[in-house]
Image (tube, rainbow, N blue to C red; front, top):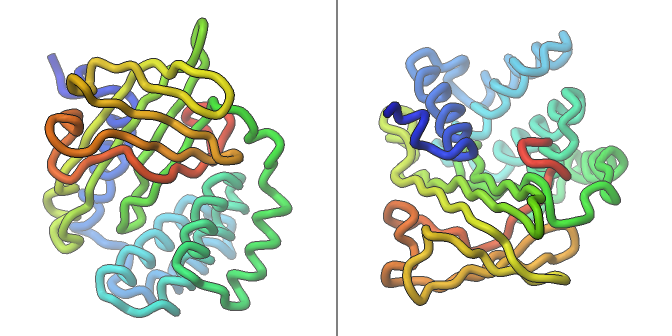
Length: 247
């Protein structure tokens, strides 16, 4: 059986995107955050938004890796917000904005894009449990959680990764990956995951906090057997779409 058949679709999608990045590392589109900014801006102005997004992701990746400072990272994040809005990915723009705000960035561009994102994201449509959620892994990569309605409840699928050493990411991929799927049971704002991937005596709960989620799970022992070293689903997850694979 091929690896593609064994892997669940959310994790396969994450690793496929990352594999493309690894391949591109041999022919990086830009060598510095400044060069990436120039290339991305040119593509953005020409309406080539996929190319602009690629360049701006590299801008952030290199700014983080080369420890260029807060200004360089804030610029890259704002570029990603604008390019995603232009490309019609308001949910993704929301994710980049949330990352910028979590890092404490509040420059003029961030404040401007705060208004742009707030006006274009359809927040009422994001109500409800089902949808596509993200959590930042580092190096312009995201972990994914997809929740779909099924008869009598919901099905949840986590695709997780730990970046590890940024210098080795492009050559070897992430330091660890994991996947966990199962049925969510509950009512109101609190659900419990029923999954064969959880060890005996381990639990994982999902709490709705507005439109976003907080995952609480048993830590240690065999409770994270669904992934490699350092992998865990616990933490905050940001909603970008009302449907799985959306945003």
